[in-house]
Every structure is written in C-alpha cells, then in structure tokens.
Image (cartoon, rainbow, N blue to C red; front, side, top):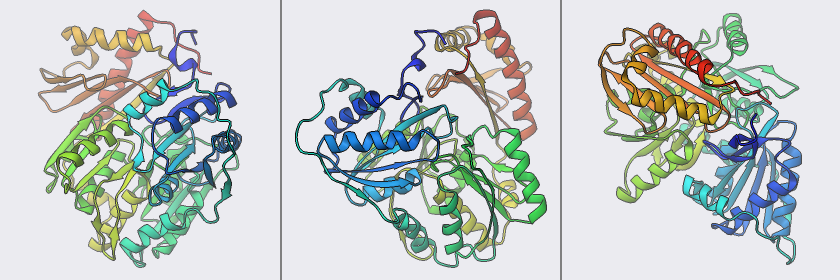
Length: 480
C-alpha cells in the first residue's frame, strides 16, 4: 500500500477506530483513550469489553491500564456483545469502550466508543482526533472491577418486553462461528422458549460480513437448513451489532429488509437509515418519514439525535443496510416495556420479526414475499486506493455517457445523489450506487431492482465496468 494511503494509520471509519493490528500499538491505544476521556462525559466509569479475535484481549488490557492511569474506574466486562456492553453502561450513566474489528479479518482491530447517552457521532470522532497527543495523568490510579455476568440485563430486556413464550414453537439454528454472542444467542432464544440448534462453532477467528456473506458460509447455512428443518437461522458479525437472519431454506434476509420490518413491528413511524438501504421502507404502511444519511452508524445516530431535538415524542428508529438496529423510543412490547437503546443491536430486530411471524403463523419467506418488490445486491472491489475511488466517482459524476456505460440499457436517469459516493436512480426504478469504503481500501457497489435476479445481474455488469475503468487508471493495492 502506498505510504500516503490513509489506511496506513488507524483512523475512524464508518463506525469506530479501525486499523491493522501491528499499527494499533500500546501508544496508539493510550493516545486515543486519553483523547476520548478529554472530549466528553464518562460518568467517572468506563465499561470495557472485547470480541474474540486473537488480538483483542491484549488491546483490552492496554486500554484498562490507560484508563486506570487516568484515574478512571474500569468495569471490565470481558468478552461480550457490543450492544450488551453499551446497554450496561448507558443504563448506569457511564461511558464504554469496545475492542473489536467488527466484520473485518483477524489482521485488523479497533475501538468503538460510547458516551453515557449512546454511541458517539462523527462530531465526537473529530473532537477525539483533534485532542490526540495529550500527556498521561500523574494522579492516583483508578480501580478495575471484574464484572460477573455482564450480559444478564441485556438478555432480560428482551425477555421482559416480548415474554417467556415469545418464540415458543419455533425451531431455530444459531450459526455460532466466532461471534462473541454465540452463547448468548443460544441462551436468549432458549429463554424465549425457542428450540435452538447451535452449529458452526469455530475455534479460530472467522470473520462474517452480513452485507457480503461469503459463498462458503452461505453454503454451510443452506446445508444445515436442509438437514434440520428449522424455521430460521440466526447469527451476527464478530461483535454482534450486525444481525444475520435467514429463512427456512437458508436464504438471507438483507439487513435493510430486516430493519424495515422490525421498525414496523415495533411501531416506529420515523426512520433514519443510510442512503444505501432498500427503498421499500418508503412504501411500508405506518412509516411516515424516512431520513436518509451517509453510510455509518455515527451519521444515523446524529440524524436520530437531530430528529429527537425537533420532535421529542417521535416514534423513531434507525438501522443500517447491514441490519444493525437503533431504537429511539420506548416500545410497548407484547409482555412489557422496551427502553430505547441508541447503539446498533443485532438481537432486537431478529427477535421482533420472529416474534411477529410466530403470532401470525407466517413463515419468513411468506412475509418477505408480501413486502414491496424491491431487491438489492452489493459487492466490494478490494485493493482500490482512495485517490482512485475519488477519481472514478468524480469522473462518473461529470460524465453522463460514462454513467450509461456502467450497465447498458438502463434507460434515462431520474435522479443523482452525492450524499455518500454516487447514487444513480433510473426512470425504470433501478438504482446503482458506488462509494468508497470508510473501513478499508476498497470500493463498494450497490444495486436495487424489481427482482433479485435483476439486482444481481446489474451488480455483475456494474462491477465489470468499474474494474475495467480501474484497470486503466490505477495499480491495485496489495492487501495486508
């Protein structure tokens, strides 16, 4: 990778600080931790957690030492899901830091920061970056407390709201791989009276990207479904803030479809979601307003905060195309109240949708078939320099003929959006979207069409056109 490529150094991406593990040094971790403490409230306590990738435990120990040096009380929660950590901290008015590289490979890791109100925004990230290079504190060290059963309150949240019989009669597979929620999912679903069959547990770290599920994992899930007659399969990414839900045959429910259905099931009337999300949300009954944002949970959270200031009583929810779900209002569940949680959650949207089909008697496939006929596909081209991504998007923005060559026979354009990258809406109803990844040196491509076949065909054609253009203008970046 060229020396001037911004991904050479740890940086804030679409969610949290990310970088290659050899660059996430003890000094780097300490520097960002001190900046976080200096730029906002913590409530005097920071709750600390980590995922299961090999480097996370060491990074968590460095974090703990830095926090103690700064005089902060640390509640060390060990390995647990990001939403469980955030929930535990938020209900106590405390801050939290999660060590995770999310869906990325084991050679990368990162930090996710939470204030007492919830996940940080882009303005918080900018403040942290501006406050780096602070000297360490010289006062007394803060204590560190090991927390026993740190996920109990998070699990109880769903048991209280949905009831002990919420999933009775459903037979569910849990693809465990190396998700930090692999045991919690089994426990939580069992507590809701589902019959749970765990499978696919991995002894080595295995990344899972819910937006770009690799063919090997997809085949493994489909094979399991064929053999075990389940109603659904559930899983998450490494730190469990992105859900993965499939129907009885192993067909994946896209995260933005899951988020849209969960929003409706929970009674939301306003939605904040990235511009890449499936547009079917705008056609669902009961959804009065949809606010589209740049990609990344900090942008979604900032939009939710803005709406809450303008309309304090709004029944507001947010979700990302990867399925991470944010609840901005108090919900009356089938059995009790469900409090807001302004960080991405993987368990809530899956439980909400499964609880609904259990009540109606529908299958997941039947519910999906009843939705507006909008289908999406996405892919990524790895090893694309930031400068090449910008040059390509600028070229396409300026050149209508070049846009038409991306996918032949799409017809006239209806609209163009530069909210994040370049999104082209065609009069036929199809959509192409190209953007630079905020987490790695790669280009992301999204399509939307009236059938899954059409969306995937457009994706393949667009990728081929983009790769041809890139081959003419750049040398691919080696992945490290």
